Amino acid sequence: MSVLQYTEKEGLRLGLVGWVKNTYGGTVVGQVQGPAGMVEEMKVWLSKEGSPSSRITSASFTNQRSIDKLEMSGFKTRF
Image (cartoon, rainbow, N blue to C red; front, top):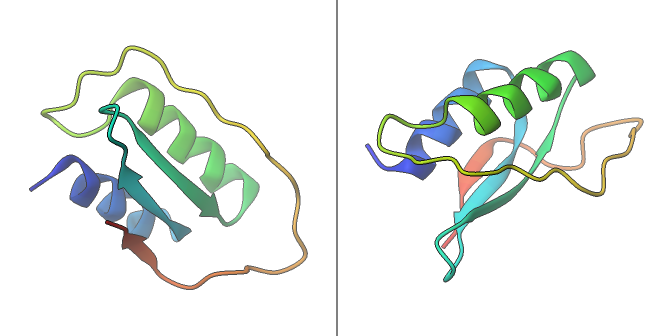
C-alpha cells in the first residue's frame, strides 16, 4: 500500500472527505474536511504517524476555516 493509500484509508476511517497527492518535491499535499475533532485527529496522524514507509520531518497545516457544509465527497488520491 502506498503512502497516499494509507492516508486515504485513515481519512475514510475518521469519516472525513478530501484528497491527497504527492508533489514533485517529495512531499504530500491535500485538503481535508469534516468534524473539527476528526480533522484534528487526522492532523496528529499526518504529523506523527503516517504510513509505515513514510519519514515525517515536518507537517504544516494552512488555510484552516470553519464551513457550514462539506464541499466535497469521498476521500481520493489525486495524481
